[in-house]
Length: 199
Image (spheres, rainbow, N blue to C red):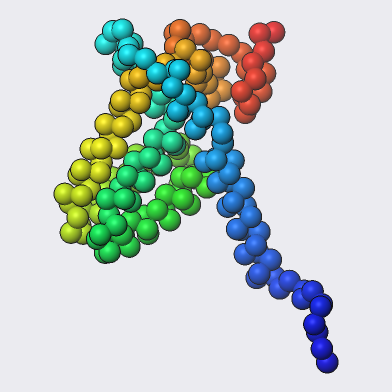
């Protein structure tokens, strides 16, 4: 009997794999591929030298808070480029990238460990030293140090030069809004969104 031209029924395992791939693709596009942060990050008209040390520190704080995922991607990409000629280090790096993807980049909900919600910052602060330590155990110490130094310089230079007047950070449900013009309290209409209500 010929089955040419018929569409095979999807098996449950292939259906769940397709759902996982589409969910991962959706999360990557919504989390990493958002045009707003990347476009804002590279706006040349928003780059200027800070006028004081306090403004420099304030800019770096705000830019790191706003662009922390972008900065993590940049540092990891520079690290990846530095390991191209070290295959064992590259394998360790790929394993750690999978950990980064599942524990940091592709998560919708907070990570829960023993009943406690773990913040994204804490996940990043845990994954970064584990990644560096596991890579240091390979034979590419000089490459890793240079790559991390370059990544840190890129983050600090961008954080210092990027104006923060139009950037706003909302700290959770409290309604504390930080920006280039100081902090102020605003009641949030919907804490999960970025819309505000003054009523």
